Length: 441
Ligand code: GDP
Ligand code: MG
Image 1 (cartoon, rainbow, N blue to C red):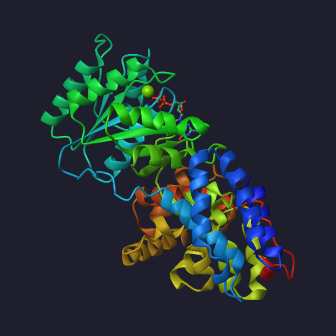
Image 2 (image 1 turned 90 degrees about the horizontal axis):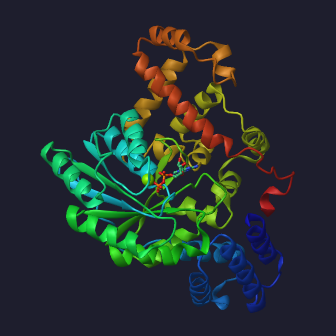
Image 3 (image 1 turned 120 degrees about the horizontal axis):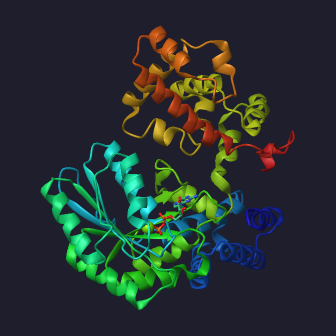
């Protein structure tokens, strides 16, 4: 898919004159690619129509990069389609909110409930989980296990078979305990069945959720629109979470879910673990949808800001995909200087957005400097190692002593390293342009 979109755009750039025919060809090819990415047919058609309205061929003034204008128009259009125009209800810390999760069986509700609770707990909330799934055997055990692991209070029953009763009791109890985020996990069915929607309606009526989150598996394909709409018709869905974005699916169903529920996507699930959960960020998502990977604009940026003679080395380093603590140290230096290479790295998804969020630069710089001080207490072997098991307890203790910081801080720095290594590894196999090709990209 990525290939075919890049090819379509590439063909555009090869055409000497961008005329109507070339634009249509490009759009047709992108249409096919978007359909493969599970974007609903109607939405693709809408996008096509809008692009034709936006991209006025006469306006493509000579001298401008036409390919980029069209690419940008498509990109913007898809971003717009993911924006329902109003934000979802956002719970407030310290004020009680009830959040109900709905979705088909296997979509990832129970997993996502815990991730959502854990995410907020880390930010100082008092979340609690209620298991109102009495349909699936073992549902309560699963939630209990997850909740225990994350040290989150939970409520459920092995005996009671009425989900409405459990939901009501659970919400009641946690309201009394002053929890500020009461999360209700519900049951699903393999198929969209009347009984399921009736149950959702009743649970919702009993618990009066401030927010209903529709959880959707990214790989469900063209069924996404109907599924989202069916839930929206029985309960007032106010937000969407797309799961399993770590798999092969590009998640085109998200566009359908937004269109059907008129609600925004708020998070994505990127793995089975509790912390594999990210705030939804529309641009990287659309890049992925278009098969531009996480690298959209990245090559352009390299070309723009890094001196010619440093480009090959940088690309080589990235394409190898190995991320040692020493490379992290050097990238921290770059980031602090915000020199040309720092600017490039700040574009890597997850690199600066989380390391140095906007508006919190001072705080983040202090953190990065703190990390660097800790790394100054590391040996060369540690800095250059590619063995994740090397950093054992005794090394961590030695480093903590060496830099005079608590062990917890060293662990935090190493966690950050693991996270960045994961981001970095996405660059592995990056195609390195040959000499002279760079400017033609
Ligand atoms: P539920 O039936 O809707 O409650 O779904 P579960 O939470 O039980 O999840 C179904 C399966 O999907 C489980 O094996 C989960 O571990 C898995 N799962 C959920 N979210 C993700 C995700 O973001 N990535 C991956 N790889 N697996 C996930
Ligand atoms: Mg479940």
